Length: 153
Image 1 (cartoon, one colour):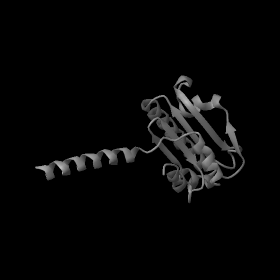
Image 2: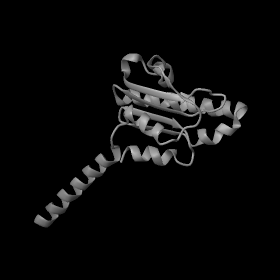
Image 3: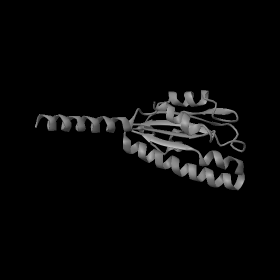
Image 4: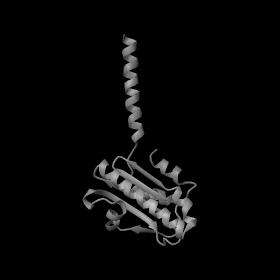
């Protein structure tokens, strides 16, 4: 009986820890600089003003806790971008993730028509939501996913 109880407690603790490990830390606006410093983006990158946050992620201003976005200055040359938005709750983050997914699809359609060289970078884009945070990045298709993965280590 004692051994069974010990195994049961161990199994419950293992399951609880596994569940926590899967979530990881939320993204923060500091992650934008980390990815920029990794040299993943081409062209002149320019900071996007906070006033554009609502249109970029489709969230109301009062739902945005943190926002930072840096994009290629000349979108005719590069589609590179890194954006992190932290929202008030997970539902708002899910909505922002969907808006960014639709934006990525639109960017890819436009690139197919006007800048086909950008398509591989768009196809390798990273769009992740963790809790209340969403990270969207278009950059070096060879290294981007690995560098984003390191953010949560």
